[in-house]
Amino acid sequence: MNATLDLTARTSEPREQAHYETVRQQTVALCAPLHAEDFVVQSMPDASPVKWHLAHTTWFFERFVLRASTAGPAPYDERYDYLFNSYYDAVGARHTRAARGLLTRPTVDEIFDYREHVDEGMRELLRSDALDETLAARIELGIHHEQQHQELLLTDLKHAFWSNPVQPEYRCATGPPPGGASPRHWHRFDGGLHEIGAAPGRFCFDNEQPRHRVYVQPFDIAHRLVTNGEFIDFVQDGGYERSEYWLADGWAMVQAQSWRHPLYWSDSLDTEFTLAGRRPSAAWEPVCHLSYYEADAYARWSGARLPSEAEWEIASLAPGPPGNFLESGQMHPSAAIPGPRLQQMLGSAWEWTSSAYSPYPGFRASEGALGEYNGKFMANQYVLRGGSCATPAAHIRRTYRNFFYPHQRWQFAGIRLARDV
Image (cartoon, rainbow, N blue to C red; front, side, top):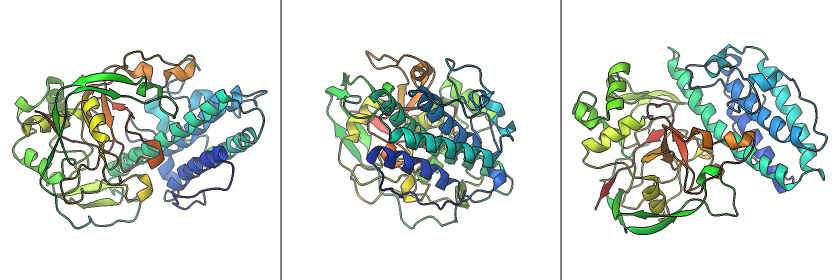
């Protein structure tokens, strides 16, 4: 646990091992600011304790790589299949997700010992002749799986710290950078047949394939994300009190949960909770921590709509400035730069689309337990695109399909507007 928050560390090992080591070290580095008590807390059923993330990502490598290798080792602890399995029914029974915060044992130190044990086994495998194409593919999947959990670790921890009455800082507080929001500009894209989805030859999740053609009408898309200041206008115009802007389920959620503003905002609308603690809101920064329902209601109120995921992917191919990812250390969405250039497509905040999370034409889930990774969740959720300020830069792609239920708010999710031509 004597790690510093160095998110750019590299090793001189062979490429595969260097990639593995870098990602595993990055997870540990994210834990450097934490105290023992921070590792166990679970603030809501959708979130998981930091300790569970550390154990589950390790279990993934042990269960699906090491134990699948030639003469694979015996389980480190047979109970871990039950404690740290997430949703793999083919593996067996598992501890209830909503009760992960009750797992005070094994201890944090024992979990770090477990990580080191599995890491040593992985190092031996990566140096051995037993590493075949199947295992190499599983290792790459496990690396990207761990990067997903790096973001989840931060978003879950943010919710836990916000839920604490003293609202502690995860990192040193800094004020919002000076700046101002440039007026919204629209970029037009032609209709017709376009190809979307990941092409063969590079890593992607199975839900990004197959690459296929889609027909879209001409559309406009905003050059930047919706800002805090623009969303305040919606709130002050009674946006959370006017049912005509909301889908029926969304309006029911507003009433049931007494939503009056985005998650982490103060009731006075002038501060927001961040991983650097509570600070004044910056009107020009992207609004985030919105549900799909809120994003859709804002779009209706503004006279626009959310883009489809096909429109978003088509627009994302336009050149733009670098994004704000985990490695920047900001861990908060950054404002757009002045000017009409299309930007913030990658990084800062995930962008809700109007597309239901469903299989692409010709999609086939993998066989076995790993086939449960994405396919079985293709119902009742919506697609988000683009990554966030908590997403590792090496993890995101323009074809990446994230997905959440429409009521969920604790992720760094924001809004980009689109409109019909």
